[in-house]
Image (cartoon, rainbow, N blue to C red; front, side, top):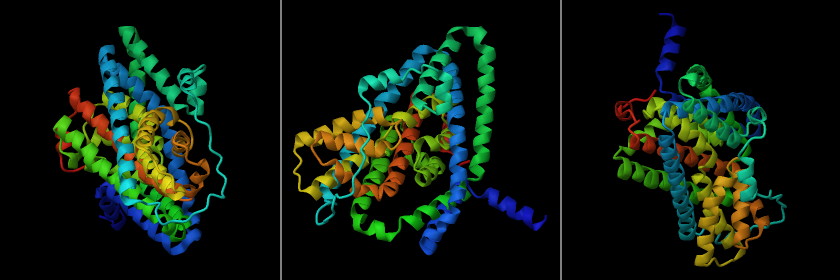
Length: 416
């Protein structure tokens, strides 16, 4: 066998998550060595992110339609939808409580002296009425073209329900969507083959531009946020899988690795959606119907990682400003952060927007957001990973409860 073919076969035998992780590590090392000069590698990451974004709208739309029509039962869809929203709200409340507790225990803002001179343009979050009205697209083609995920989800759900209700007359259209979804799965596979190189470019840029000079003064708040994120995944997610589903959490974590590494490097829950769907179906054994419905909804409304970030940063800012938070303030943070996660998930810069909502509710100066703005990318990488891990956990748990989880795939030792 020619040497280049042997090398190619060896490369392909390496699990995708290992290749991606290697790209991440090499990128971080390259960025640390070359500093801002490593920005020359950023186009690799930009190409990868653009390719991922290319997949989002057609993949969300086709998988939602296929997922709903595959259920064949509107009652079942309503049941799964109720479970999905309930689990996402529950885990979000847990997440923000863990963030608050971690910040209260480790006191990341104590002993620091940072000024708030840098102005921050805090965007106003939409009201509940605006959110509800904005869910329904006036022009679904425009929603698809502009990538308005919330409106796309509403339109796809409506179309899927309609195709189910008209029975045999809808079968030809359903088959078209099934073929289209399969094509999108294959395109996702092709894009993911480039993932290790894209992640390498992204991490080289991040490490080169967000080095120790930025991280050291705020290393403690970063450490607390990362520790809280890890605890949430290992305790809450793994615990729910074990207690409610009777599933081995280690298999869930291993099967989710591809998506978690992409989420960490890209800092985009929606951008990671194609990889999440692939992991749910191929590694965790969740049916197309459940994963095609639950994951797009989760990418839009599940913000556990951002909830942890809110809890940690709110307490951090309170400590910096010498503000004493009462039990009512802590309760307000939990309630506001949980409810705001639904309303701001589809807005660019959702993390800072949600943080401004929480801080204004408890009387903290919004100018203090500037303190964490410099390290927001580092924090965003962790919170996005938690968001994606939560999406996959809820999808797996609902698949198990609905009898649509292939345990042979879930319990196998290798991943695809």
